[in-house]
Image (cartoon, rainbow, N blue to C red; front, side):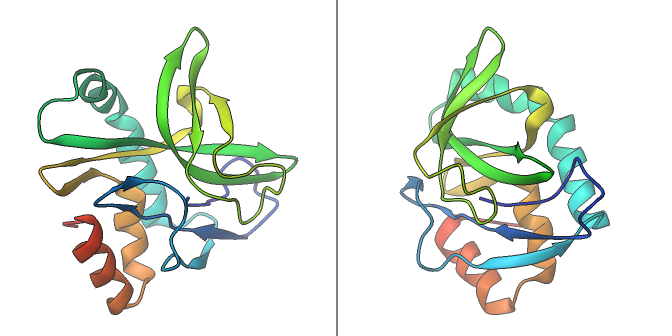
Length: 167
């Protein structure tokens, strides 16, 4: 899960947690996951979200085919409760007549009405990132790469070593 406040400018600082989609897939938050704070309007994070949204159709095509050597397809979606928004990795997911539905891969840090494993419905407009693994390497996951810029070197190395991030 990665939380970033997108829709309301009322909050200047937001809480986010990073969920690792490990070598064994995307699931509940691990004990190594950290809760971090990000300033609303962070240019690196906003660029990462723009990049992910700009390539979403390519990702969805890859997810539909699931070529050999690919796995752990996931979407990061913004869910809102009142004036608070939190981003979650959702996996598995599938298209519906009105958008998508999927399963939250972690417990929230902010939105207490949600819990890991809960089914949620969302649209393309709610998607802030996407990712999957190909031959052991992360593809996409642009927000995670942006988060590396503010993380400790040890944490970044942990995610690279255990989850295949090349950024």
